[in-house]
Image (cartoon, rainbow, N blue to C red; front, side, top):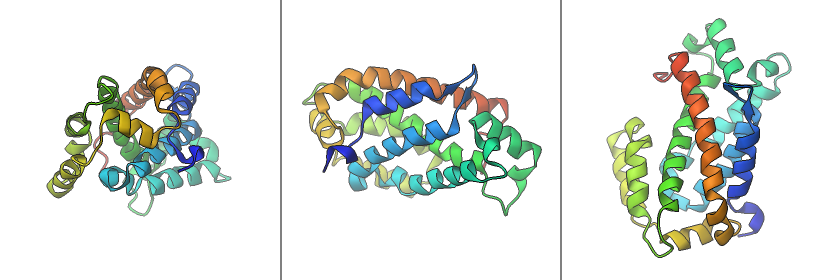
Length: 209
């Protein structure tokens, strides 16, 4: 596996730091760029994280496509402008329209899981097994949105997770450096997550089907 394909924690920290827009918004394209990096993490974990990685790619691509459309691209400059546009045009109730807000909500939930997993991972020692912290992070986040059969399969798969040190070596560009920069990445990830959470709460969109 080449270094280019590995998960770069420092890159995620930098992108998330830069994508905070004004005082209450998030730049959509930068959010997606950071998620591209996070998706590498899911893929490097293989089938263990199949419950979250299976459709991340398609959701990223849907939002990229809206950003690049000639007539409406600027409506998708930030997450806030996207939500306001889709609500104003009554698109959230249009069954023939693939909602950007609904699509991003799935990524948002995945981001909560990856944040919680990496936060708990950072508290472990190099030789500690990681399946327990992954299970607790999952149960506190994504499991709330998954049917029983997915939850069961996810928890069983987690028992294959290696120790903290082995996991970081498997997925990161530089494992020792990753441990150093992880707190910074977590700080900026939490800032972005919190802003999106507030936006969805303000517009009452957490219940989008």
